[in-house]
Image 1 (tube, rainbow, N blue to C red):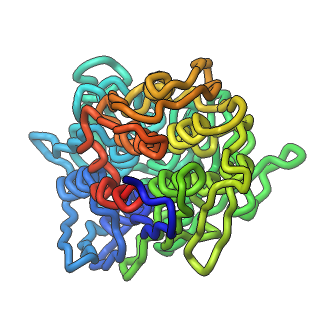
Image 2 (cartoon, one colour; image 1 turned 180 degrees about the horizontal axis):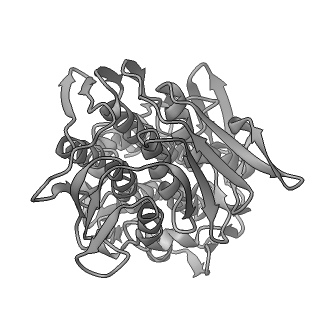
Length: 444
């Protein structure tokens, strides 16, 4: 029987996005770094394995990670490529392809079949302009592939980030190791959300790298305070990165707003308030938007130090809303699940690129919500959710497609009295191995 009194207390796991970036930066530094609060998950293991293949070394010391870097020179193979096996981590694939291109030698980029269906051609085109040679071992523009590189000379690069802002992040991380100043221009036609790019720039700043962000004003480029930028618009913004060295040292990874989202939503739709600690109120993570979305839906939000409490609306039920989630796509499944508990429809837009994640997250999310009793229309760039009478008992079979976010967002339906049965509950290990243990605190 679920408790209906008291408050649930959850410690936010370490940020996956910042853990990836911190581990990469420390691996490119010259010397030893000690990283505190690095996320221990399948995706981070993939990134570290790729960096080991490039010459870095790692040792866990309690909850801290000691990293010995390669001094800006990822090492590839001479006869056989260094094996960069991504499994199904898209973040690893896009960031490490850019980083490895800054090294020397041969590198093979590969993963599971789903990874071989996720495009990387726009990033490869940008790197090819720097002299990197690509051999496609399957479909052109997709892994598996082999890169041959002699390093990045620097100069001007143009990249189309319509498919993923991670293409830009991979180039920014790699440009530090280039032979001269690199100017990265944005091509294509799509305006891209800023938050993940900001996290990359924050990492560069934290590791002592000199860079500048310039925006178009009256036909000329003007240096802009990067924390004040909100979008990456083709032809309107560019990035200057000076060649340099990542500074080894001690760093701490902040808490993860993406993985906190399930518990924040639980506080809004469940019978008890939920307190999540370990989060930065001023974080640059785009998924911090979860709080403002829940607040717009009627949830009650209070802060104390690094802990935020979410409680249900005074009325007892959330209200639907219209929200553009282009800047926070990873929390779309969470918001959609919360919307199923609301009064009135919810319209989510701006997230067409969710179709090329670990699964098609628009169709996957819609399928789960329909099984739970909700009417869902899948749009070109989002979802329209019309709440119905949620089942109050019985099983909810969830097809996860091996996608961690499908599994974790579906857990919210346990708060409607359903028994949530995921076909692959273990897929949460991709980003949050202890999720179910923490979730039991909510439903017990």
